[in-house]
Length: 162
Image (tube, rainbow, N blue to C red; front, side, top):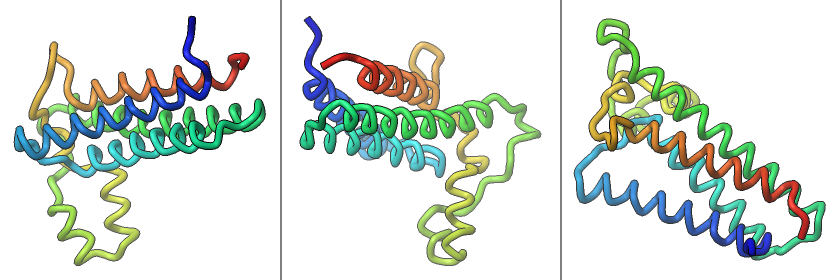
């Protein structure tokens, strides 16, 4: 028997919390510094989780369930597009990788907000570096797998019967 729609929203939220705990472990314990695209992907994992948490707390009727499901799908697809961008950067030959930019805090201190945001969303040479992998798949690859799973669960939530 499947968990209810409300329980599934809680599972989605807890899954996103788990993903963020893994990211925090990799950053603070393993010492892996997140690149601009990594930070963008984290923001979308958090967004998917917040949508699911709000859906869990709200426990809406059928139309609301669909709205939350569609919002979750959109957030996961956009987040997945940033994962795909990073995977593309990681696949480039070394001579085609864009130059590395300054640190994020420096960019937001010195550059106009929109220019710093553009670099955050576009990525730079730091995003092409593969610091860690599991079974030959980089962090960006595993994050893409997570976004695909989150989108699929939200799609299921959108069309399932209560």
